[in-house]
Image (cartoon, rainbow, N blue to C red):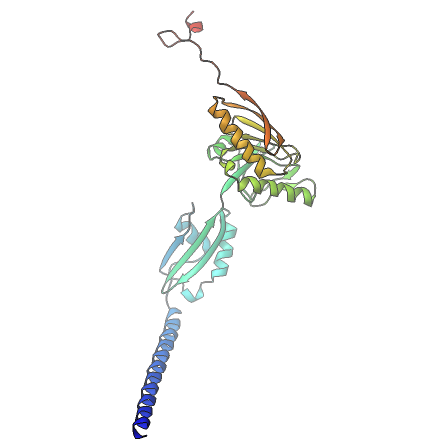
Length: 279
């Protein structure tokens, strides 16, 4: 009995000692956290960094955010800086401003990607994949060089930078179906080869692929199947030596094709001039 009682006392002592050590460790940790929080109120912003791909330079984001080196970390409002950056940096789709102990500000960004352009009254407007207008220019070639697809939308009334295009007819179904078609092309691999997309009549969608193959896709029914059929048809046409042509959808899985062969080269003389010019 005495041995059991001694064991119980030893065990209780060990447990109480472990509890005391754990309690002291917890109190020390809380004290350190409290000291860090108090100390952080007097720390000035010393470093900045960007996370994510963007064409904006770090110095631009710092300048536009309103945060300055030396500002007290405690005075920096992340939400306010995020709001300012989205207003002043139209190419940013999203931005998170985060404080990192002890004195760093991190900008986590996601940039908008240009995918389309419109022609309106001889002006050209570049749009991202959500159709937000980001750029106005008179130079169509510069937009083509960036790999953007020329887009024709139904009844466009006005186009203003930093806004969505406004349709002339307030037809929710028209807008919804147009955006649905655009999203189908956006997520399809054929988008990178698309040079022209005409959605002025959603029952007769027209497009140009690789700048050479003109396609009448019909309506948007089974659009993914249609695009797969078009892609296969073009691959076979190129393998057969065609450099372009016209494709008309008959059903989602079949289509008619009228191809174009390369123009024959003119015969040349030994000087490299065409015979017609030499004569």
